[in-house]
Length: 62
Ligand code: SF4
Image (cartoon, rainbow, N blue to C red; front, top):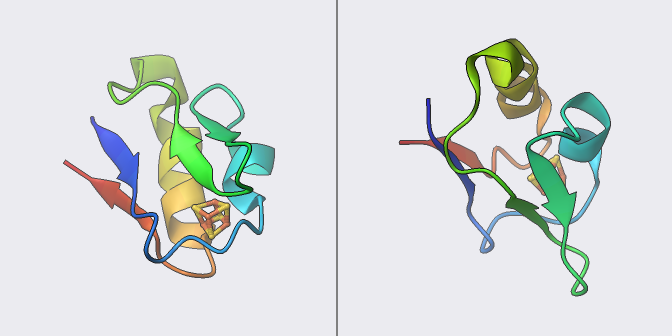
């Protein structure tokens, strides 16, 4: 599973960091980015939850 954050859509709510801090972080600009594009298997469920819960639908797979 690979993920990335579309910085055109992210509004920095931070939901993804709360749900999956092993994969997502906030940049100095206040937007999220994936610190690991390749999500380790043990974090896939949390990463999928972050995708589903992102208010801006800014997290992409692929
Ligand atoms: S939950 Fe979505 S909008 Fe909020 S910081 Fe994460 S990627 Fe950005």
